[in-house]
Each structure stands twice: as C-alpha cells, then as structure tokens.
Amino acid sequence: MTTFQLVLIGFGAVLVLGVVLYNWLQERRYRQEVNRLFTPLEGVADIERPTSVEPETERIEPHIQFDAADDRAEPTPAFEAHDEGAVQDEPPPAAIAEARPEPNLATELAAPHAAPLQAMPAQPSVAVEFEPESPLDRETEYIARLRFSQPAIAPAAALIELMRRIGKPVRIMGQREDGEWEPVAGPSRISYAALELGLQLVDRSGAVASGQLEAFCRALYNFAAEQGGAVSCPDKYAALERAAALDSFCIEVDVLIGLNIVAPDARPFLMSEVHRCAGEAGLALQADGTYALRNEAGRVLYALANQAAEPFQPNAVGATTHGITLLFDVPTVPEGLTVFGQVAEVAMRLSKSLGGRLVDDNGKLVTQESLQKIRQRLAEAYASMAERGIPAGGERANRLFV
Image 1 (cartoon, rainbow, N blue to C red):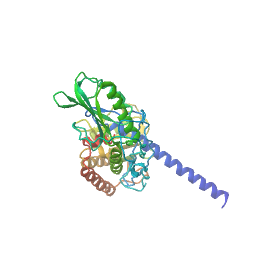
Image 2 (spheres, rainbow, N blue to C red):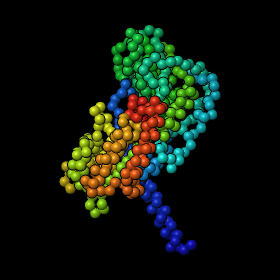
Image 3 (cartoon, helix red, strand yellow):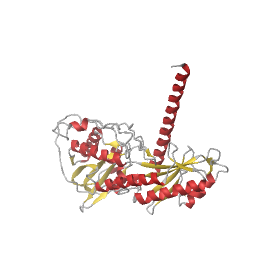
Image 4 (cartoon, rainbow, N blue to C red):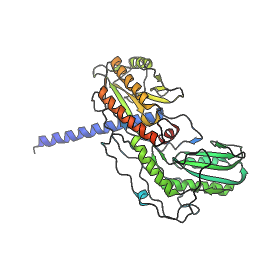
C-alpha cells in the first residue's frame, strides 16, 4: 500500500468522524430545545427533578433510520442507602442486576431512555404491601405512606426539599381530617391524617435506581421519626422490576421527529421571510427565539427551530439562516397522527415558500412516500401506548416523558 493511499484512508476516517460528531452535536441541541419547548403544563403537586439530570433522546429522521444511543449515567442518591427498618427478605432477582443491552442502531422505533439498574444490597427487612388510597398512580410510581397517630400539621416544605434530592420526580398527597386527599406542593397549615408519596419509576433520564428507592424511604423514615408517625414502604425489588419493564417499553416509543428545510448554498433564508412563513402557518414566536404551535390548553404541538446556534431574530435587518427544523415530540402530543399530518403539510409549505429543500440529516429528500412510512410507524407506536394505558399526550405520558 502506497503512502498516498494511506493518506487518503486517514483523510477519509477523519472526515467520517467529523460528520458523526457534527450530527451528534446537532441532535443533542435539538433534544435540549424540545425538552424545553414541550414541557407539560404544571400537574398535580409535581416536584421537578434536579436540573443536573439532563434528559436526552435521539432525533428521529424522516428517512426511517431511527438511531439510538445510551450514554446516560445513573443519578447518585443524596442519602445513605442503609435502611434498617424496611425492605426485603428475598435476594434480588437476577434480572434486576443485569444491565440493559445496548440498543440496535438499526431499530426503527427506539430511543435512549434509561441507565441500567443495579442490584440492591442484601439486608434484613420487612416488606409491606398495601393499596394506595390517594389518586397517585401505582403503575408508574413507587408509593409510600406516612400515617400520623393523630391529624397533624407537618412541615411539608421540609419534606418536599428532602424529596427533591432523590433525583426523580415525587408527588405528595395529603389526607385531610374529612378523609379527602389533596396535593401537597408547598408549605401548608392544614392538618393531615396521612401522607402518600409517589416516587416516579421512570423518566427520560432512565429507570429509578435501587439507591434512589433506598434514599426515598430513608428520608421518609427520618421525617417520620421527627414528626411522629408510621411509615409503610412496599417491596422495593418488585418496584425495580416494574421500573425496568416500564422503562423498556418507554424506550420503544420515545422518539423525536425532525423535518429539515435547508437553503440553497448561495441563497440563505432571510429571517424576516422565515418569520412571515411561520406566521402564515400559525406558529408564534416564543420568548426563547423559536416558533411553536400550541393547542387550546397551551401545550406545544410542534416547534420550529433554527439549525444555527442563535435564536430566530425576525427584526434583525439582513439576518439569515441556512436551515430550519420542524420538531415533533411523539409521545407527548395528543392526537399525534393528526398533528403529524399538520407538521408534514407545514414542512412542505415552508420548503416551497422559502425555496428550500425538505431533507433528512443525510441530505436525502423527504417524499410523500417516506412521510407515509413514518405515519405507519407512528400508528403502531400510538396503538402500543394506548394498549399499555399510556396514551400519547395523556397525564401518564406527560410525567414519563420529561
């Protein structure tokens, strides 16, 4: 092999690595924008997860090459894992100790969702099973109960602060003296006979870890020791198994579709023209410099982002961009097939009005045939979500895919 051939091989390898790195950076930025744009409206006493846990899901491109990668680390619990008061007699099931296998990059409807679970350390315990009395969701949350010996005004703000450190969303419900349950989201002067706390089993950073379950129960035991009350924490191993199964399902349907409109090399799009066309399509400029279409409830159905790093600046004289992208977050949008039809129609209209090309990240033209293939795959994903009891855009989906 000649020196010239070696140089060509080396140059080709560097070029491929450069393209891969560029695509990864672009997709990471779009995922961050979507997580901000598609944030659901405030729910029932939700406690946000710490900002240090950054969700990432891969973009799904319209040529039906659904890429996946798993680079998220398991959050570190903020509390000691030792708990002499609760847990199991049984050794952990072998399945819990196994890491989730790497996803197939050729899988069509797959996106990263979880970090692998770790086995819980063996320790003496007493498992307590009970049916939740509050509206918390046993299918998607690990629910513990704190019952006071008599109705008491508990320092809810301190408990909420403890739960924020767990690394997963936690909801708290309080039972008033009349027996009714209500959300507890901040300081309260109401006397409660009992509290139920729901630790979310799965979100976009992955499944709950054994250490997080331990930290959750330990925090609750410490709180009960100070305030007076009896704590019930159900089987943690069963919860880890439910979390693993739920997370595996979420991986299959957690996808993001991006439709790219690129300008000719010699004639970039004017920001003012993008603003005009976006307005004609019903999209409104947001405070962060993107465009979005919202439904009557204020939820973002899809968004339009600048492919360049800077936000849209429609009033900047002469400002241009070489590309824009319509973003559609599949599991969080209600009536998804209808909305995707709107996204495809708007993408076609924008490309025609701006004189650009509708392409995927590899520069391949998007056609009606490729859009129909996406629609078919979406129909399968939505049917699977509905069968699992997690309809797209519903209350459960809005908690799981954040």
